[in-house]
Amino acid sequence: MSYWTLAERLKNSRFVDLTHPMDVEIPHFSKAVPMEKEQVAETARDGFSVQRFHFEGQWGTHADAPSHFVDGLKTLDAIDVRDMILPLAVIDVSAKVKADSDYALTTGDIAEYEERFGKIPEGAFVAMRSDWSERWPDQKRFVNLDREGRQRTPGWSLDALRFLVEERAVAAIGHETIDTDPGLSGAASGFAAEHYILSRNLYQIEMMANLNRADQAGGMVIAAFPKVAGASGFPARVFALFSP
Image 1 (cartoon, rainbow, N blue to C red):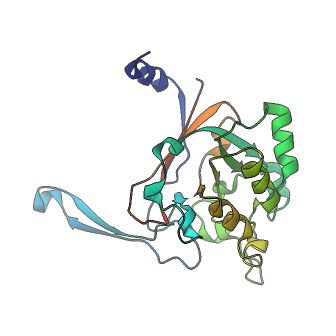
Image 2 (image 1 turned 180 degrees about the vertical axis):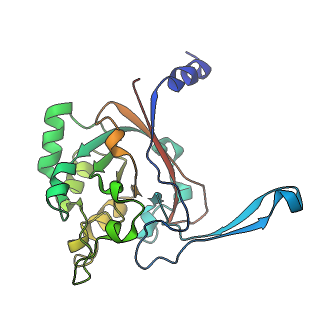
């Protein structure tokens, strides 16, 4: 089968865009420098339109390269394009997060997933569905600070990530929140879960959208980002394909 034929077949898939629109006023890490956008050329005046953007690499839906936490590991430009097209597994813990905003996805959640859908394939992209993206674009609700200024957001447990990496050989992970770790324990643990996944020379996608529209198994994800030399992170365009 030629790739032209394959392309036509793929166009008949059900597509789900897993990316939030990137703009100035969107949820972000509390220490991030706000994005700036400037119109430097206008069609009516200059014959063409050009904007200048200033933003941190970890802005909006974005990819974190291993070098984000560990010097000497892969930067974004070193990530193989074959690792941007992956089988997609979506573990739904949204009901548990609704009951407990500090919830951490466990190995038990992975076991429940595999009982229902089968073993997570090697080289998969595993996404945690929390429905936290429904709080977008409200910065206050997205970061969800309590009265003591602590971030009350869900995330991954370290044990779950160790299992996915060491027992299932996943290629990447993704989630809807700003951080990999639950907000309440992240800073206190030195962001142990995020440090672990990146220290294994794997990348992750943060602040994903529309995982509630994604099939939990059988789909494919495409995570694309610019090939910026030495970048530890950059906004990404992420989408998934499923059987129609």
